[in-house]
Image (cartoon, rainbow, N blue to C red; front, side, top):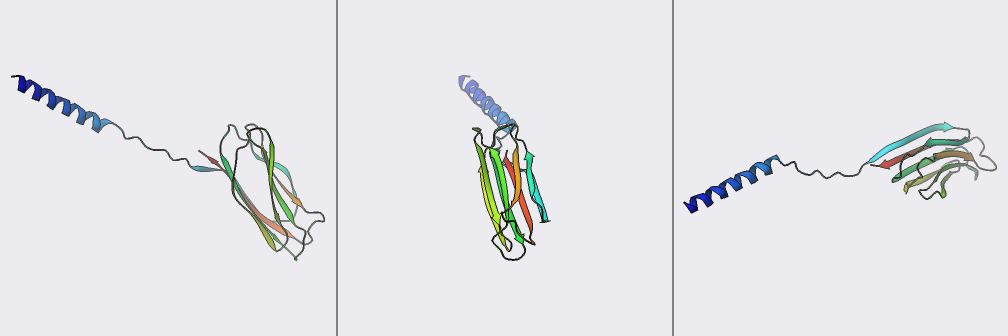
Length: 147
């Protein structure tokens, strides 16, 4: 009798384990993904772009941007400055500059940054001094947030 009781208890125990194991949902690993916050493309521009707000982060986080500028026109030393500026998470002002003289290009690989929440990330496009003559530009800028 005692063996039968122990055997029954073991069978019930194993049955319970198999039922709970089947009903348990497997833990899904969440992989962080980059989400585009802002993407800009300007083709054949000829004018400067004043300081312009692109977006204002609402919380601290990891961001990255990629920029490319190409200038067209006669070969010369003058050109265009593509400038991105922000305050980092500590409040310190930061900026990066990409330069392209006519018949050249400037490229910024993906650069990480952590902008201060509530303070806008801004873009500016300036002509050099002296300004380029008979020159146009095309630029691309992408900003992504890690979520």
